Length: 262
Image (cartoon, rainbow, N blue to C red; front, side, top):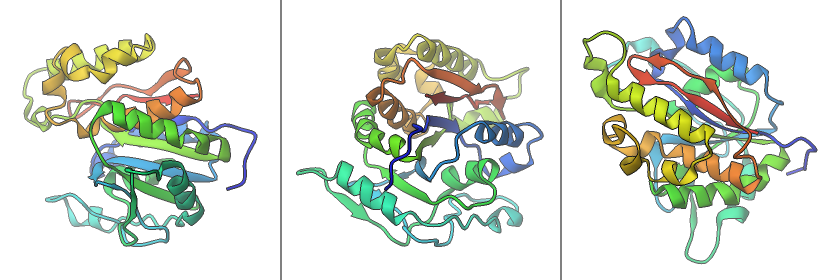
């Protein structure tokens, strides 16, 4: 891939479910965010909804989306996002990640899942930027940060690295009947924001033990895990200090905090 003089930022975003498209606020926040970014040459997506080991590369040509959700109205299953494939990016990822004992596999018919395409529809609606999705081979925060560090050189080649999860993710929030948002969601969001602002990497890596309500905010950690790929890509480039929350607030009781490094 050809180098560019402008280093791309690294993003962690909360992606929402398919009905995000109907929210009166959130799609506009995502669109405004992307409008303020340099135009990427390609996008590398790491979604909470694809765990596969060894690390896998998705399709490098346009294939059907993965509608990995159930029980929604039919029109959500008709959404299309026919972004170009990114074979050059895939080859660059292979070179950066493949090493003895760390194989990389290809799954050429694996399309973008909703953790990838739902936010991309709002951020880059023309679907004219090549996109590659890779799997998370582990949920271990330290190993994911290491993967992010290895991927960091792509940022200098015009690649936007995006970790897509949800800052809090416990669907018990959907059953919350009290005023406001669930306490555990608000507490974890506030703690996470403070930890990011303080660059407290050790606390974030150990969030299950060191955060308030960590196990309630993330009964399973796959939606927080993509943050660590993003943080690794930022750390390798010395950008952890250049962090800012771009989107905050709550959606159906879940914290939609989304952050940018660089």
